[in-house]
Picture 1: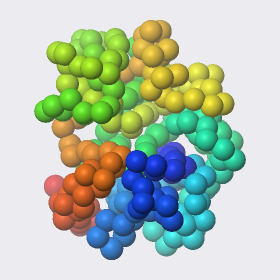
Picture 2 (picture 1 turned 60 degrees about the vertical axis):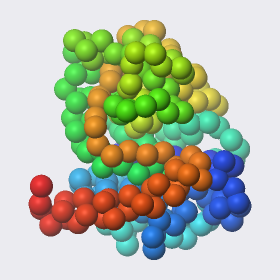
Picture 3 (picture 1 turned 30 degrees about the horizontal axis):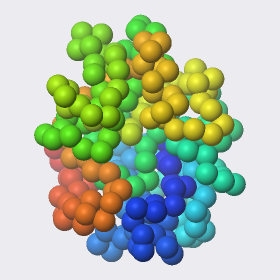
Length: 245
């Protein structure tokens, strides 16, 4: 199973921290946030990774290399300009090829079980006609993420909105796709605005609801919150590494 990790953004909302470092390389404790994601994936046996890189990409490539020092295999998809989230994945097609794959962001911290979302996708997508599954985090209060409305019987997402009223299912920006997704990805554009609405309208998007820890490192206060969560994440990864539940 392949996982594509988006690492090419400039992280302008986290300046001045990101003036000399790409956002996924910001330190949490003694190592970059992206390293926690790589360790998390490796602990679940997901070791075939593609990094989409652009802004200050040499910092990422120098740290991770081919991935062998971290127990994974890493290939790099280099972006020549700002492509958006969907465009970044489209640009990496030659490295992913025609198989089901995960997409996640390089600036998030989560204890979500990635294999569970892929297993869910493989089980339900083919019989429902869906080609994509989005991880939906159950929120206690509205955040700055798209909110999904979902049919709980079919598990299909029925619409997204930016100002939630009744729903509390936030887009965690973790996706499982099958090979039919390639025809839906623009050369330049974003999942939130250019892909998910179309998939939703066509009834081709499933929702996987989870309650695990998740935070997006978009702003300074979130960066500080992630630092506070590091001890918890280390405990989770340590337990997985030693076969504990």
